[in-house]
Length: 204
Image (cartoon, rainbow, N blue to C red; front, side):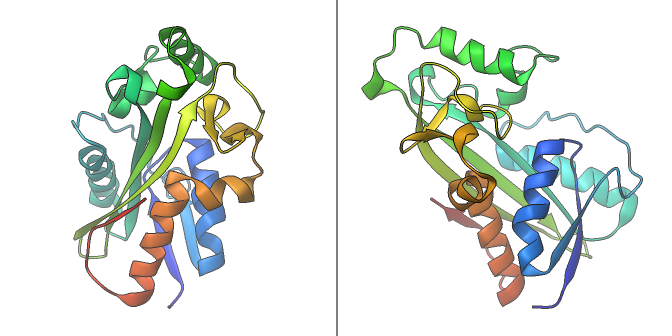
């Protein structure tokens, strides 16, 4: 696989850091949209993760006309009928902190027993090539919602999302990237770049 340079349609520091760390070993250099001198915020008005990822990727591509990736991801909680889903970032309010978002989930699940606290993270990556053609890559991470926040690593809902015996915020970067929804989606994406195949893939 030839070395690739991509622009990531995001201003999320945690997401940018993860994308760079996961893709760098495969010879893929990721520049944030800020590093590419694009300072727009895209309204995430889609009804699905794929729609939002495409909206973000398209907006940046229209400025730069170069290969772009964008992802949209979120937490899907079974006991909350799939919420917060595509509304994960805004679930506790537009300007809420990560701590406030986690707290809102815990409050809504106070009476939910352990066996019914199942949840998953989902990530859909949209890749636009030099011609602007879109491909999508999806990854999931199954887990459960804890009862109290634990750990100081990661971001978002990581302190309350338990995989095995640890929350994602208790994991090292290497541990998290090996099992996370984003890590799994990016693994399929880099395999697509290596093999040159056109397909949309779901990785569980």
